[in-house]
Image (tube, rainbow, N blue to C red; front, side, top):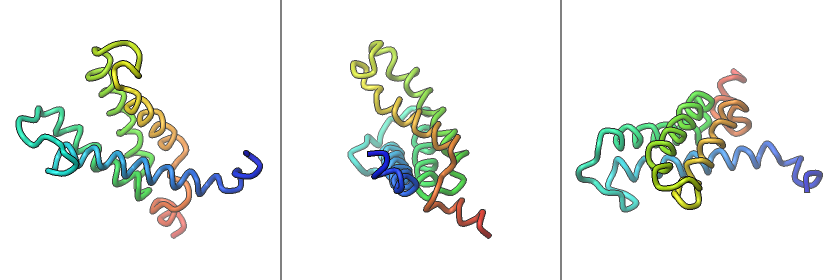
Length: 128
């Protein structure tokens, strides 16, 4: 499969980055706005902070604008979310529902190290 799909690796990475950014932004929107069934009342300050990071970083990652920095911040936020919210519910991620936080954390860490790749506003800025 690597031989067949390898030639499309930059495009597959770009689609994955865009999709992950949009999904992350949706989590932030759910925390900040009356969308996607998120609770609007009595949110603790950490929930507001998480929502701002998720919405802002998600949009930046999807657009590929300042993507490495945004992904690094998002990765750290997901690591913190795992240890603050999920770990106390049990050790295994499948048990404590922290698997999505781990996946976001490590994918965004990869984006931070790799850069946004093709189809990104950062790429357009570098060409100019």
